[in-house]
Image: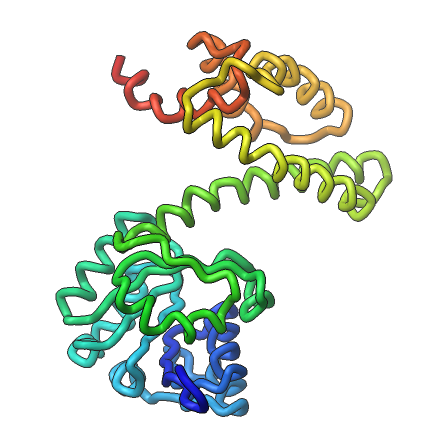
Length: 298
């Protein structure tokens, strides 16, 4: 992408994220072809200058760079199957959810049809697409990343190449994404507790953000403990967290909350203590998590 030239791009899949991705390409001046099974979803993008392909085959044939944003790898293969012959020699970038195994299957399918494959993930919401601090990361064909990095970077300024393994983005996506649902459910539980006292969920937002900032600040230290396998100098021990389980039960009774979702966490803490980690850093839970299948077999 040099001077006035902008790489033509095809975007397959026009849900909220796919529409945002296509919009970012259009805003950056890239000739953009779009395709979606529900054709009506293309209309707002066509009004902004996108070309609406009638078929997936026509969409793939339109550009050297094909970006897909469908729900799963299986959905992606299903959508692209009629256009498989057109993929040969083209760069295929997938931005969808799925497991590392799913990404490896997707890469094998793409390779079997002669496509150059790069698996990616968007680590933000649709409204943040195109922002300087929006993170996207990719794994797979390094040549594809090098050739199209300036084009991909219009989707987010924090664009990272993880390495040649096609499943790396899916691996990081699941590893990092594992924090999302517990954090959100914790917030929802807090909101329910506030409302039980006649207070608003909004009243706790500022304090929750501060709490997340604190968690932010301790992650490097916890990661270092895990990487070194040394949990002997805890800022917060497993036993300290285990002692808090009783407080959870008290709050559940007082605010009439369903807090059964805590039970697996309490069980994990107890298993860690039983394994001799009671006085170790809370990061020692990592050892219990990765030994789960071995312990069950025993």
